[in-house]
Image (cartoon, rainbow, N blue to C red; front, side, top):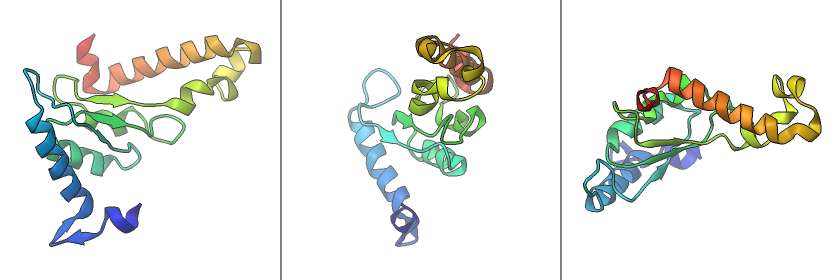
Amino acid sequence: AGTFQDRKTAGTSLYECVAAAVEELALKTKGAGNYGSIGAVVGATYPEELNQLRALMPHTPLLVPGYGSQGAGAGDVAGAFDKQGLGAIINSSRGINFAIRKAPYSEKFAPQEWEQAVEVATIDMIADLANHTPAGKLQ
């Protein structure tokens, strides 16, 4: 990804050019709310770039993978949200779907209780995001 992501195009990284184009489309589809109907997928494992991309795309909803099993925490994804706690969907597929395979869920639940592990992992993620990101303002 870095081969293309960090390529300079007239002094600007390719990902910045893509962000500008996505933001332009989002603005064209913006309704009464602050966001357009065009979104972007921005990984959480590079939080500085995530913060930069949120600044470049203030009207673009962001889908943010990387939380949990991929190594990003709530502090890493905080910059994806606007000041009202909106604008981002944080994804943790492996961290939730396979919660039963790792501590603390593997210690609390038997393998056949995987559904309870999924539920508790989801509740834990919501609490973590609410306590450490602007999304907590929505509660």
